[in-house]
Structures are given as C-alpha cells and as structure tokens.
Length: 277
Length: 292
Image (cartoon, rainbow over all chains, first blue to last red; front, side):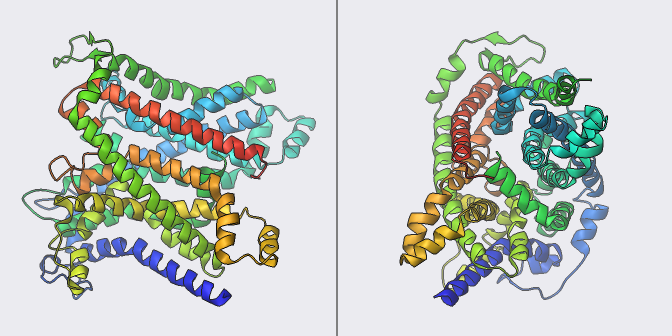
C-alpha cells in the first residue's frame, strides 16, 4: 500500500513537472531555432539545428526589432528602486505595528484592504492624476506606484517575521540604555534579514513582471521589458524566434533571483499566501 | 523619543504613500464615477449623478464580460484547487527531492503573466504549435485554438491553470503540515482507509487553506488582463473580453472615464466583500489557535 502510494505520488509529480516545464522548453527551443525550422511542417518537437540569430536580433536590434537592453535596464531600475523602498517602508511599518502597536487594528485593516484592492481599480484615476502632476511616463511615477501597490504585501510578510522575533533581545538593549531607534536598527533589523530577503524577492518579482501600469501609465520614455515584448508581435512579420528570445531574456533575471532564494520563496508563499494574511 | 513617537515616525512614510497613491486615487475614482469627461482635455467634468452606474447593466458588452469572467473563474479556480490539492498530497508523500521539485513547479508562477500569454500563444498556434502537433500524432485533426470558441476559453483556462496550480499546491502543502501526526496515527489505528482519512481528516483540516487559496485565485481572475490580452486579444470577436479587458476598453478605447470608474468601483465592492470573508476565515482560524 505504502509503496503503491509513493509510486503514484512520484508519477503525479513527474507529470506536474513536465506540464510546468513544457512551455518553458518550447520558449527556449523557439528562441534558439532557425526561422525555417520554426515554420517547418510537420512541427518538430525536438531540435535538429540551433542558432543564435534570434538572440542577436533582439540584443543588437534589427530592421524589425529594437535592442532589448535599454528595456531590461529600465525594468531593473524601476523594480530595483521600488523593491528597496517597499522593503524599507514595509519593515519599518510592520515593526511599529507589531512592537509599538502603532495605528492599532484600524490601521492594520486599512493596509489589508489595500492588499485586496484590485490595482486595476486605480488605473483611471491614476491616469488622470499622473497627467495632472507630470508623473505620466516617468521613472518617479512608476516607482511610486510599484512601491505603493506592493507595500501592503511587504508589510504583511514582514509582520509575520517580526512576530516570530523574541522581544527579549530588544528589551535587554533598552535596559542597557539603547534608544527605541537603536533597538530597532541595531538589534531587530539584523535579525530580520531572512524576512527582508523573502519580502525583497516577492516585491522584485511582482514589480519586474508588472505589465498593466507600465503599459498604460508609461511606455514611451520609460518602457519596461514587459512593454517591449508585445511590441514584437506584428501583423506583417511573424517574429516567433525573436519573441521567444526576448521572452527568454526577460524571465532570466527574475527566475535566477527566485532560484537562488528558492527556500525563501516557498516560505514566503506559505506565509503570505496561506497564513499570516 | 518615546516608543509612541518612534512608532509613528516608522509608519508615517508608508501611511503617506497609501494616502497619496492608494486611498486618494480611490476617492478620485468615486468622483470620476459620478461625472462625464468631455473629449477636450481641459474641459471640466460634468456631473452625471448615478447614470454611469445605472448604464452598466444595460451595456450588453459589460454583461457579456461578466459572464465570460464567471465562466473562466469557475473552470480555472476549480481546476487550480483540485489539481493543486493532488500535487500537494503527492508532495507531502515524497521526502527526497521535494525542494527541487517545488522550485521547478514554481517557475510558472515566477514568470511574468505577459510571458505566460506569449508561451501559450506559441503552444496553441494552429500551424507552428506543439499542441496540435501532439494531437495529430494521436489522430486528432488540428484545432484553431485562439480564434474559435470554445477553444479560446480553453486556451485561457489552460494558461491560468499552468501558472497558478503549483502556487496553490504550496499553500495547501503548508496546510497539510499543520495536521498533527497523532491524529493521522489514531485514525489508522481505528482502521480508517485512505479515502476516509482524506474525507474526514485531511479535507476538514485544509478547509481554511482551500478558502484562502480560492480567494486569491478569484481575485487573480477578476483582475486578469495579460493572458487574454496576448493570447486571444479578446477574440474571436469579443468572445474572450474578460471584465479586466473590458474595463480598459471602456477607459482607453471609448474614453469613457466615468463608466470605467463606475465599473472599477463595482470591482472594489465585490472584492471587498470577498476580502472580508477572507479576513473572517483567517481570524476565525486564529481564534481556533491552529496557526503558529
């Protein structure tokens, strides 16, 4: 019985992994395939010859494609700065809420309500307000926006970690004459490093992957990688190889980041998704 | 500096940002939903009362988008929960290599939704995609996936199941680890078979986790934009214009800011109702003392 169960579990997992990875395989395959083979009939499921042409076209640009690097750079700046801001504000806010009970239950519920407000509900007012305040299509606009929409998640993730931190260490520091600020910066903050890592991964991934706001509230002067991708699709030329190559380049930073921090990722999902929220 | 002051200093920047970029715009949406915005850029908005709201139920495209969203939601969320539960049970069963399997499974959830749209658009391509190629191997004639109904909806649901099922599985696995081993042992000693254990112990224990995962997935479907935007472009015709896509059409194609704001507020009300259910589930769970 036990062995049959384990067998079934292993088979199910193998199927799930195959299903999860097949689209990734197809993107990678298409990215490295010569044009003739992409359109060959019947469709070939395995590679026969490989090329770097598609990657070269999106990296250097061609008649039909813009170079991808500036878009990756924009994404890195926007996602990087928003992550730093959201994590800094999030850890400060969560610490005050948990340790000093600042804001009480009302403030906590207000933040929770932000977490569940669909960001698309804000698109019309933000479109109008961003144009009014010259934030439309600017780095500052997108960064402020990403910081705000991901801050509730950052606060709730950090709350879980602050709760898990024994208060005795900070109390001892206070008795030894440290200020409240000293207890926070010199005692609590270093111990919260794993929580900060988890929060940073999530905010970075969500900011890096964000499309809607980047597309509607920016996209000309400040254009992220997610805005670049749909531009490659045209009615005239079927640039499948280039699209796949660009898609591959766009996911590498996020996936690499998540892979390195893999054990934190799982912890973040169980915390942020299933538990503390 | 007292603890009280220090606490206020710490939350002030976050609170200011929430006010300026979250709650402020939401209040502006309320204002916009009661007005009409003339085409000229600097013309003042005109008061319309509740007309933007009362017009929504009379707009056939709006009603259709709600129906399509409901269909996608029911199909996608039930598959995500069902398959996610199966994957969670399987993950719970294996010890060796669990971390590796989990990180491989989570790749789809870490990928940008727009890239998910691109990937499935390629897979479902009628001429160059592998889905039809594999179907052909077993003798099924090619399907025009993204441009005919109901296949366009099947394509969207498949992409959503692909993207979020492992995420759901990880949440449910978190729930499985909260079941005390003593309870399972006692049930085994009492002679309960695997199906009875599943029905009478595992599923009741997991109920709050199912609710939490289900609510997150419902919210994900209501706000869904990228996958239908790329995969089907709302087509064929307007058959896959989901509520998220229609909201944008209303705002940016038809320049009906008032109507779009009214629709957005409707979303907020519906999702707030769902979220308050979520809060009740979570706090109910806390009072039972089951979470650490």
